[in-house]
Image (spheres, rainbow, N blue to C red):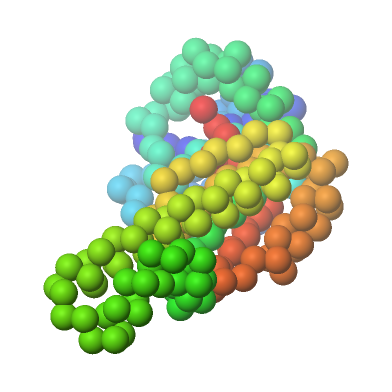
Length: 239
């Protein structure tokens, strides 16, 4: 029977799975498949697992339960293996890399940092105040100059300035937070964000990291929204 795979742990991990059930419309009990000094946490499934809210939450709850007791390599939602033999073979074939990865994330959690321009007006006003060319173009338009190229030129200039300032802010945020992270991953921003950052933070550095995070949130202005989330299972740092 097909197995939905949640995560991989060391074989010695406590794997306290009591009270948890699997994903799917007819959830099966959780169990483990062990090989190569590793255990995969699985549940049986006879259906295609879709990202419904209940199943997403259940998948995450399993990761958090395991993470509370030791290092875990969380799999992304939706991974299904054809049978137990396939899971065991994967554990045996990749034992060295999985064990190395478990050591990398031991006593660590993932934190996300995202930044977006929630209110553009303060930044636009700042650009007009700081950039003489933009200020001149804006003044000509407001004075009634009918040159059709003026709005386009102003728009392009402002867009370049906004992008440059957001890139500089993203770089500054990265520089401020990296000292607290063992590893980091940056991804292309989406949905209006200009920063999408994942950090792997060791428990020993957690308090200082959270202080730095709070300080940055207070310092950032100009209509910028900073969104922090974590601690989370280290999805971004599983190879």
